[in-house]
Amino acid sequence: MKKDTTPKDDELRPEYDLKNLRVRKMGPGRKSFGDTVRLEADVIEIFPSAEAVNEALRFLIKVTKDSTLTLRGSKDDI
Figure 1 (tube, rainbow, N blue to C red):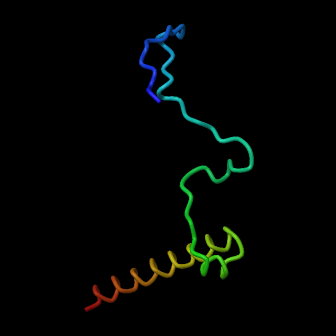
Figure 2: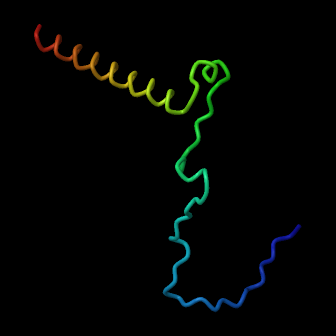
Figure 3: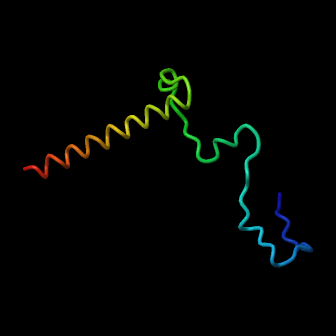
């Protein structure tokens, strides 16, 4: 199928710039506005909900930050 390249009559005023409009999600998917992460089946078996996954990841971030700070502190003591 060929694309229609004929010019169309545009009645919209030039001050209306539609290229900068943002799309708003409506309905149940609204809270999850953004990228979707797909989990493997073995991970899904362990975590019952998105909240559980987020809690585990936040804990991992905290542990990683704490261990990084500990390692930095021990280097300075030498």
